[in-house]
Image (cartoon, rainbow, N blue to C red; front, side):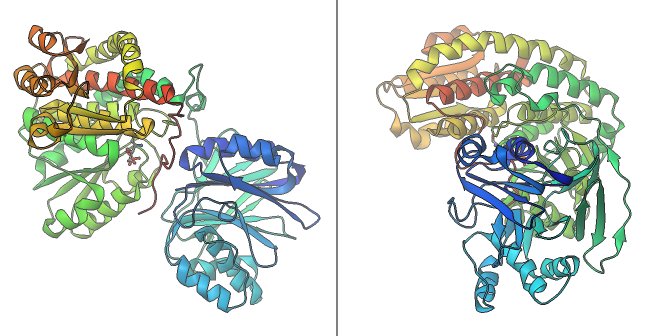
Length: 596
Ligand code: M6R
């Protein structure tokens, strides 16, 4: 949660524009408050921070004018301490000699704050990032040099976090991490550190990935890694990153979400190309096939992909799999987990703490961890015995779209391979997706005027489309702030049907094999005055019973769910914009949830 970026340069310079640009790239991680600090050669610290999004706060507080030899920017997604100017980061120590910012959670911050106050320090906020600054201050005040002070502080701070700190009168910045991701980069006359790669790549492609228990010492043009344990040097090869940064631009679209929805045909094509050639697919299939129990674990959208994956695996490979939400895996499955069990952990970011904790708990009982992830170099990648990438490039928008599509496609591919079925027919999917996008746009546009004012909606599906209904509903509530519940269509009559009254909208996602069942559900709604809207292949029975039908291209039951999700994504997007919301950064959310 939250994002940090720090830079050290060899001369005093206008650091503001660099900090703002890095902050904008990090803002998918948190956007309820933002702050910049620069350290100047005259021994002063310029600290500016407030509640709000980076562009607005940067303009109001003049971030771009900030100068110095060292700088830090932090984007906050509040966990400890409400969003406020005081809780915004970076934070100063008691005397204003140290300045630092963190991402993640320091879970013993309340106890530490009490200790710091008792020791006579000045604590200004209720934010755990400030705790990290005082944790270092405590040892600096006892006369330790910075590196030693940090080694001691590291032992006092509990939780998963990454932290960057600078001290007046020095030429360095220091950073360290426990649990969260942290990357350092080396540039000409400069060094940088960040929670993620995209904020670093415009400045350098020479990077070092930091591991738990390491302290990064940044000097102009130089990065040093030292072990917390004994302060000794770590030798690690500098990596040269070749990834393109074009992904991280909107490319003419008004929002990343719309761009990412439209990228889906191409992303699907790339995934198929990759999997057709990858030896890791067979390695994954072999492990899943041999599993005593097979668990599919994820959160949010990734969990919906697991639900769909379980249906594909049962249907195509006769392989039972247990889809489970990350945090529920621990009480529900871990007590019964043992050697021979396999967990496939699914995560766009590869950093979701709820998923990583589940993985660790399973591994401790002998489970073999596999990964399906988008971010190469993520914690999940390193913790997986075998992993498959989602090949989606950067997904910037908080709502997951293209990564869901490729998660679902990856499951379909694995299930086909496991069941010994040909995968060649999947090559038709990219064109079918493009066709769906074309036909869905005007249809969705036609619904927006009617639905934009609604604060209540249901989205129902059955069998292979049940996970799609859940995913459509999640997208809808995430970016429109309206209540939209996804449900198995047959469950609707067991209670929620009572909500239906004149004009009440219910969306049905219909697979070609499920028309009779969906038509029953539709009639239960329409005969009570409700409005039935359906997404499915053209079918007289369906068309005769619903108020609106979006006909999907004929693709058969296996590909139908992958097409059906597209109009739901587009509907969520257009409703969001119609309601005056920025779909890329919905309130209260963050793209990467590295906290409990
Ligand atoms: O990075 P992950 O796939 O592990 O993230 C899991 C969820 O937080 C994520 O899918 C979330 O539900 C999406 N923002 C929904 O669009």
